[in-house]
Image (cartoon, rainbow, N blue to C red; front, side, top):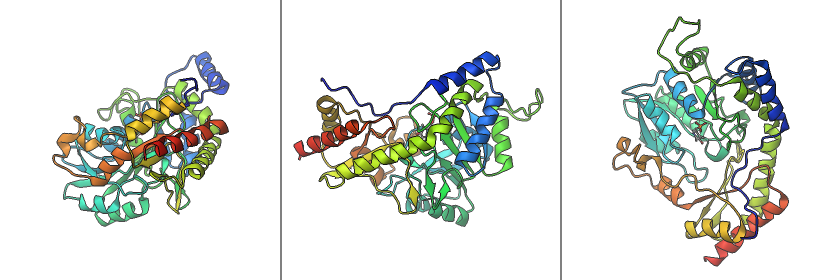
Length: 369
Ligand SMILES: *Cc1c(COP(=O)(O)O)cnc(C)c1O
């Protein structure tokens, strides 16, 4: 293989991030402190219309603490998609509640409101959609269902920093929303998560749970975790936040070029965007009709194009989570899990890279038809 591999994802870490970390190291105060506080305020302003934000050590911690803060626990059911990263269902299970897996709608890969409605029981406490790949879930319909049945509504916005629906940012719809800051996400703090909260009470509870249940030192009010973000991580996140809008625009431009190149290709479905939505393309995910493994392999070996399959096994069939859904059949989830390929769309791609990705997909798909 002579062509250099175009990676499926590429975190961008520059001199600004290095300088910020160095500044914190030199300050001698590296655990949670003023940088975390500033990061929370800046994130709130820039991304979630001023909702209170609480930074934690990972996105998964953010989901777990958010659910606990909202009162989710044993005996409760929370409706989640199965077509997502396992952290979504894991976080529900970790509270002692039961994740109930619903199907996705066929276009945007997100929770199908009709399937959610059909999954409601007397124990249902909440709905937690995922804005998968950076496309907002159907929050208007899900909010209507939540209100009709007096359910809480949460958002797994791990992949969707800056995405919008009807002009409002994701993270401003649910009782709480979690954004992941893992390196492959649209922005990073190294590891980390941000919880955007609709109420002072949920925000206070997340803060307590983050820090051993303490607001006042050594006056622990509840049994909590150490899920604090360090100032080192927050300093990286603050720099990345200033660059996010530009990176998002570049992702959208890249997606437009992939759309133009692949739009008419038989055997490939490009990712649609809802009329009311702004997609931030954490992933650019196509569906293919042909043999997916062959396509993924040929892209890499013959064209130097990396790609990813997110996610090959629906969560309700994972050994870890299948006990919550014995015998469940989610046909659209199964179909997506067999068909999806995510192509590189990250902001470091050159025009030449994008041309190579398009040419590679066209050649590989045509060769298989
Ligand atoms: C990345 C991700 C998470 C977990 O975030 P971490 O920061 O890796 O813990 C949760 N849900 C989804 C959909 C994700 O993509």
